[in-house]
Length: 127
Image: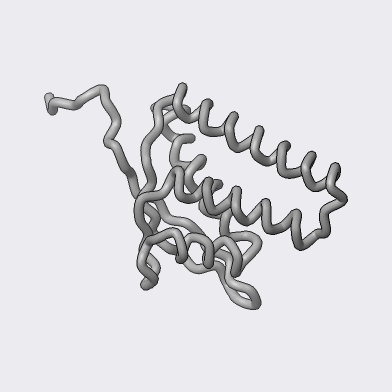
């Protein structure tokens, strides 16, 4: 019988279908960080709080759509940085490229986060 550790690997790879404006989504391999259940819940809580704070701030200050979008872009870039350690794009994986990804296509951040969450689903479902 093969030996197996209970601990998960610190990273895992999953395919992300990156939307392309006017074209079909492109499959790109992303390398993600593994978080245990408690750490993942804490991370998601922080994202929810940040999104709510951005919305409340925008409403209180009467922010323009451009200002509100800037807050969303910043949060989405932080989300991708939190869970991703590398990718299969030709572009180097760094803060500038992450911001470019988030800025160039409205659907890209959600595609990355959906693929990340989907990778956990088989583990949650069991055999």
